Length: 324
Ligand code: TRP
Image (cartoon, rainbow, N blue to C red; front, side, top):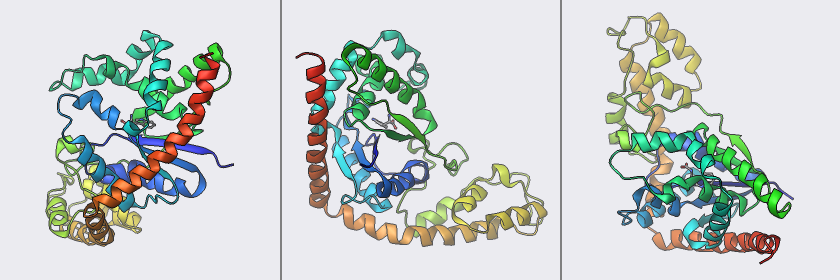
């Protein structure tokens, strides 16, 4: 029996290289080794986008198209839509009954986001309960491993604690999941902040040549390297961060940059070429997938059915454990 993996993303639309190197690439590898469930967490998207739900459905298609573009294979894993599996809401309800409020207020991202996201009112029960819904996502499938970025570790810790509490009350039914930290290079946005759609600094998966050129042109470089032969500092340079991802000879480039033997113009030109080679097959694949919504819907529908079957097994045990 293979170990089970569950992960999810909120459908916020098109994916960028931060998603790819931070998560997706890892998801693709894991399909070979584990019994993988990948969820479009559209109910989680509601926690912040409850006032305007008009984009969630299309965003789901875009996100799933990008998953497949990156190499996620519906024949090797289960691709499902959270909102199509009502067991998520049932387990969420039961878990919420045994969740101490203090645990939720203590999750660091809760306070942070409440302070940082000022264009939406997040003083909602659902937003506070975000980690409970996430725990339900994971525990419903008895996932052994959950690939997450560091930003999600506190949520995963919550899932582990609530598992122990549940099992203490009702018997050993749920499986305590383990985080599988994605050890990936941080992908900066073109302005050197974290790559994020809301910053407008992203390079998208399947980006076309013209816009790749424009984006690389605008990439932040070492401000102290003004002339070609000035010695550079690759550490804070976005172009170099990308070379580390795409250029096998990035070690050599680091030396050349520091020595002042290569200038930013050439360095950028080479990056454009490497990015373009990487993107080329993805551009077409992505276009084809997005042109065939019926296929994407079929993938989601079939995956959601499989997920429902797995979820129902756990729920039968949960109801029994609660003596219902
Ligand atoms: N909270 C995750 C994020 O924002 C998305 C998510 C929802 C998730 N349910 C999950 C991740 C279950 C892992 C497991 O990125």
